[in-house]
Image (cartoon, rainbow over all chains, first blue to last red; front, side):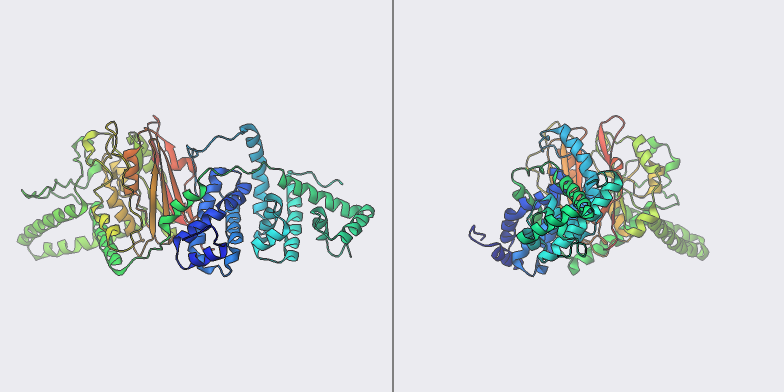
Length: 188
Length: 405
């Protein structure tokens, strides 16, 4: 049984042994984080939830490949981020919702959200075209607001490697934003 | 620190991640280096833009429970067992014969009806040449038609035997040619099933679908499927009151002992009296048939699924359907395809269950596929195209596995 005192490592180990309750416990612990990671990129709650669902579906199927149980959180976050970028690139890949689910609440500020979503779409489109290593690093630092230490652990890479990825990713984005007219050319 | 040899320090400075000593050194350098200041300004703009978006929308309550609930049935990996493969092979053989029968170019006399049989007369195949009013409904199951056809052929053979050996030879050769022709036709033509939930099911709409160009070679080569279903509004055509029970051929498949992919959800409540029972699924079995017969003449959905199996997907399949989320005005159907390269869609139970319980005349239906590599080819408006009278929604689905990464 999945107790509250059980660590994620223990839950992962039991889930890898085939315990569905342990996996359900993992979902409960990490689903909001996964949702947030996806929602930051796609900017849509319904889509983010579907991405979260797909993320855990894949995680379950590939759980045996996870070598370090402690890395589960970062692992599923990375899956979610990649899926979210896939969605930005091609919205038809995962699913489609022609009218939107009926039971989801309307946005608090629809006008602002509409304006925001147009720009977000352009920005995320550029971000999704980056090398995935760079895109994930930039997304975790600049979209999700993770610290370098947190992002480093989530991605399973060293701190210096992460810093290089973030910096190079930002540089490429800066150029592409300027090229697309999303940002003015640097005028410092 | 050599500031121009390695520029990563600018992002670290921006994020204030440099050690204290290096921060001061960087500030001194920036004050004297316009190039690095421009670099810093550009990166700051970029970072600030990324951080400027509204906080992400909050997840609705019960997120984890919903995810667990949806993923739960998929946790057991399903693989076909030998007896299931044998059953699939049997369905395949049935499908071949069905196709052959459906595409039969020669008119046949009506089959003899046995007194104890509930078989209905088999209509002549050249239906397009007949007035629609003269077309009898085709309610009999495919195996029953096959039986009737066997009897007809036996009669033919008897007749021909009387006329001499030469005609007997011809008789033996004709079916072989037909089979070859029909096989080619079946492979060249993507099976399509038309689906119209609600009362629309208009012939015009169906004709429109049928006449739309179908990239059959593309679909077939890539493993595609086009599904269409038509629900006829005539009460006379309604033959089944609830979730499809005419899927006799496929019904056995998931009910074999062993890990059944998904159980169709038992309706939580009986359909309201105002609800019409689920109409018999009547669909054109091929594009050519759809053209010639339009909406008035069609096959059952099970036939089409079987036909789809015939178009190259009978090896194995891991298609699973999660219990549909059905409300009074919408239905959401989730497909989980374990092997995107070899699958077929078993939508009939779910769609029937959904359409029987959706009260709204224009229900919203979502189809969710997993994994995402299973790309939906059709554009959104083609997938969900409201009928002209807005009395129903026509669903057209094409699936094709994406190239392996």
